[in-house]
Each structure stands twice: as structure tokens, then as C-alpha cells.
Image (cartoon, rainbow, N blue to C red; front, side, top):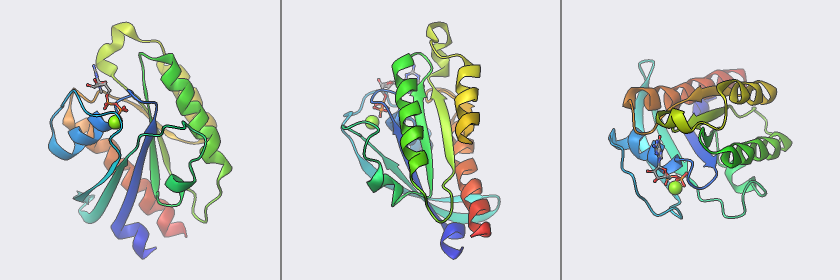
Length: 175
Ligand code: GDP
Ligand code: MG
């Protein structure tokens, strides 16, 4: 419970190109930077205040070459997941579905909160995945669900990362 309260390890999963790195950079720097090496895989640490309580939030950016097959190494580290797709890319949504399938096979002592996140909301005119399709999948797997854009409001990105922390705290207090 102590660990759940003061530390949170957040893993971002999703197809390459869905915007994981852009979201993390936005969260950490408040800026949208449009190009990174897609193979970038790293852990960033940020001291955050969530509901007036400090938390060390570690965020893992992933490049999952094998796709949603072997998630063991993420599951063992994570206290929460954000599974990201792009609303203008149907295939990236399918990848999320596979991640959720794979994650649901793992059983941990405390259940790990998962956020399903539809990114690139600014590209509404190219939308391929309806909001209700996203909502349905989230409901099926008991995830939180949001749509967002990494290039728009910093506040929304921060809110989602902080909400993941709140969920971890809730689960933690039930351990
Ligand atoms: P990753 O492979 O999941 O880490 O994806 P990246 O963060 O590298 O983003 C892939 C591409 O999508 C980059 O060219 C980003 O600039 C772009 N991108 C990321 N998020 C958004 C977004 O919210 N809106 C738009 N229009 N482009 C985005
Ligand atoms: Mg990346």
C-alpha cells in the first residue's frame, strides 16, 4: 500500500505512430514536438502533485517490435497502463484491442488500472474509429476511456496521467 501511494509506474503501449512519445513529451515539457526516433524506449521520472499528495510518477515509453504478444516485461513493472491508438488509424485501434486481450491474461495481486486513449483528436476530419467504438472496447475490458490530442491542451494530457495515479491509489488502498 505504501508503494502504491507514493510511486506510480505508468507504461504507454500502442502501435508505432499512435503518439505515445508525443504524449509523454507533452506531459513532461508542455510542448508538442513532432518528430522522434520511433524506436525510442525509455523511462522518465517526474515528481507530481496529485490531489495535494506528492507522487513519483515514472513513465515508460515503449517501442514494442513484437507487437502485443509478450507483455510480461511491462506487466511486471507497471502499476498502470495507458494503451494508445490514433482515432484516424483503424489498425492502431486493432493493436490496442490485442494489447487489452493480452493484458487481461495476466493476473496480478492488485488489478492494474488501464486507460484506453484515442489520440490525435485534432485530426477529427480523418477519423476512422468512432468515439462509441472506443467506449465499447473500454467498457468490455473495464478501462477508463478518453480521446485527446497530444498537440492541443497540456491540461488534458496532465489530467489523464494524474487520473491513472488516482486509480492506482484506489487499488492500492484495497490491497
Ligand atoms: P509513437 O510511435 O507512438 O511514439 O508515436 P509518436 O509520438 O512518435 O508520433 C507519431 C507521429 O504522430 C509523429 O509524427 C507525431 O508528430 C504525430 N502525432 C502524435 N500525436 C499527435 C496528435 O495528437 N495529433 C497529430 N496531428 N499528430 C500527432
Ligand atoms: Mg515513440
